[in-house]
Image (cartoon, one colour):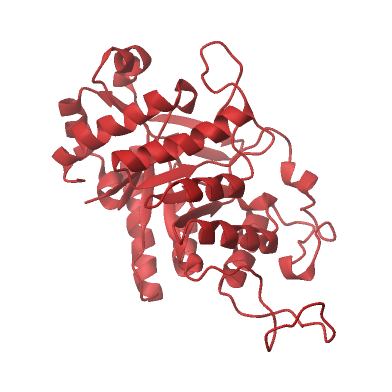
Amino acid sequence: MKKIGFLSFGHWSPAQGSQTRSASDALLQSIDLAVAAEELGADGAYFRVHHFARQLASPFPLLAAVGARTSRIEIGTGVIDMRYENPLYMAEDAGAADLIAEGRLQLGISRGSPEQVIDGWRHFGYGAAGNETGAETGNGTEDENGADMARRHAEVFLKVLEGVGFAQPNPRPMFPNPPGLLRLEPHSEGLRERIWWGASTNATSVWAAKLGMHLQSSTLKTDESGEPFHIQQARQIRAYRAAWAEAGHGRDARVSVSRSIFALVDDRDRAYFGRERQSRDQIGHIDPNTRSIFGRSYAAKPDRLVEELAGDEAIAEADTLLITVPNQLGVDYNAHVIEAILTHVAPALGWR
């Protein structure tokens, strides 16, 4: 058995052919797709977060809304860019959304990806020493880079999610306080154990395992060996699981991978994605210093798709598969994409 969900970037554009023409469309359609996915029997609704872009941004209002409209499906992110986050404020938002969803949040966090703007997090008040607020978030250093800051914010976030008091209470408060140091509220018990880290390197996945975070690995990875994408990703997952076992957390690790997968079962599928049948891994540079490998898409008739997916070593290693959806094609078509995988592909692979 394998958990199967969708991952939406929440793109919107008034361009010709787009059925998601505004930010309002992207948000409302995201809620509707989560409801539809739950009705179809999918296991997760996950959303990407980007800033300064015509995509989904601040995730917690959306996660709370999905939580209020659904009852079973996991609700998550893939991923929240921690360079932009105040970890204390984020812990309050996350706690509230998780309580609304009755403990179904699965929050993916990470350093984030290349952006639409230059050092966008600086516009949010983060960066060099003296440019952040609050001792609890920790001030950066002059030579700290965005990745280091993201990891530092993540560690603070994980700490406050434990629910341990740290703030000295006012001796003359407006309202009565419980005894001892005060923690952030609302606190959602168990959320700390449902935090995932999106890792593009083997080393970062090992770091995440040591901190007790689950692993998200996407269709993009740092090219560390020159091998095919799925083999490199499988090696990453094995390194992560070994580090988790060594850390002795006393609970099971979870790993998700994301893929673009389309079962070509009708004329719409063939028109939209028939050309993807020739898809191959691609090599590129997401920044001047990082050689990356981009995983192929899968598009074929169901029987052929089953054969191809059976050979993907990383999918075999993961317990959760997130299907990236073309959200601008509308809720109905995206529900069809999910249903086709659940109906025509997953049972033959033993995922259902």
